Image 1 (tube, protein in one colour):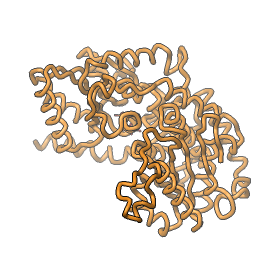
Image 2: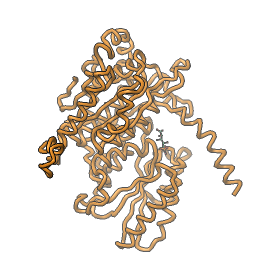
Image 3: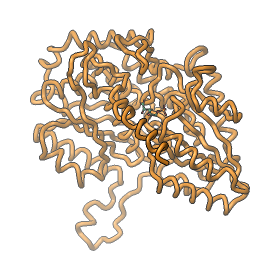
Image 4: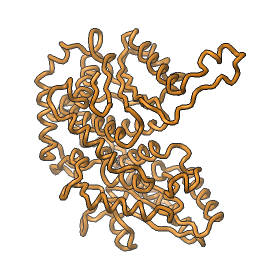
Length: 479
Ligand code: PA5
């Protein structure tokens, strides 16, 4: 178990040792581990990653590891953070609802912050219970005609019940022209902009380049006088939760930006050393890499035991899949690298997926996430004392039952030689969430080095785009 001073812990007992990843496995890649550490140190210091090119084939820096450090001249500066907080303060008590438009890296991190802070019932709480912050809805993360129409109907009904109804549309797109995001934005904007009593404002979050390089969204913002925030250069979508992309959502709902970045910073510092047994991101990368390379564990089930953390599993799917799912290594050789990520939630999926984890092919690592302290934490009451089966777990706290379920799942898997590990967040708050997300982001940087693949490009997603563009054109012509 590797435990940090903050209480954050990585329990790898069921991932390393006899029958799992052995000391000999690790010794066999000692040179690669040192090289991976040196490469990530170099990335931290200079933003340079060997062989990494942007989509247009030019060298591109990788700067996400700068984001936790708020300093003048950095991507997050005291001024930029203050501007976000001021923006949040202008919404408080003055905006009824926000709709966030974005997909992939321009959505998944935002969803994590919203779910962790607000939970499922945020939008049905009173404004006072939300501390004056607005309701928040997501759109753009699918091209689903029904969902978009349902959202419009919902806003129209709310606006009918309260005039004036103040709605903020936050449009997030680095490229500024993504079909999914912009189609939903245009449908919703057009449907609502002339409704009496409905006051709409728009914020655009996009590449800050000006002039010839300005994105469509940036140009629209300039023409229409919309406020803008930046998707910084050198920060890919899947790493952008620590930038203004994620922090815009934090500002909209009163999520603690300072604590979130402090957690990421604490994790960055905990992961500075070259000894894998003392560096949780490096250790995670080494054990997962060797689980796959030497033991055929090519699937990673990411399984938080908390509904509010399900979105972390969805965020991690993109992080792992886009970073490490690569056809070729940096020498151009075909390697078809990458574990397949799978979302699961405990205890929910113990009644479904666990059958496969326990008895299916021995090709998985189950990565549990546990919350150490719950508040609130109801006691299961003896509501029906005469029923002996129910009395068996009466008087336990819900968190005790949840912990017992996780421990039993890990033990059952381990008894059958199956691999798992546990990240423990001492409690679910902004600081520890920052630690967890940053650990995972840094871990894929290390694993990219171990596997010698570029963890920061995603050429595979261009394949369908090249086919889809002419299809859309043909549809337009045929109208
Ligand atoms: O990681 C990625 O690059 C993607 O998931 C993008 O974030 C997603 O396609 C959205 O792109 P954009 O922000 O340009 O609209």
